[in-house]
Amino acid sequence: MDRTFDQASLDEQDLRCDHCNWSGKGSGAIVIDLYGVVSDKEVHCPQCDERLGILKKEDSPPGESANDLSFQLG
Image (cartoon, rainbow, N blue to C red; front, top):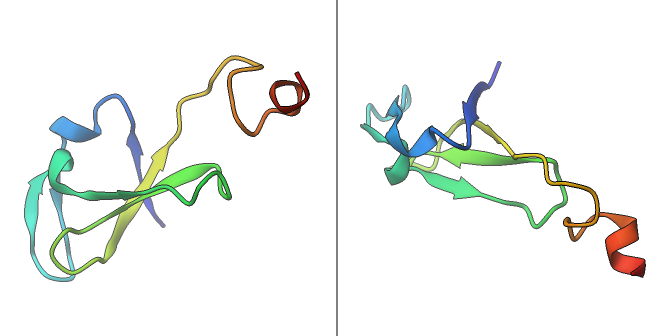
């Protein structure tokens, strides 16, 4: 099961990769956003690219998201 990270605190969290033993702060990890295709972002190890977990996106108010139909139609 994937570890879940909070967007507000990821940068300061201590992370460790079980695959290559890299350790560091969340600010050093690679965060991958698949351009709105999925609802969450992936957090990867900067050394070996192993997936460390998922980053929950913060909810945005209606009309402020590029994926929100009311925003697109104006």
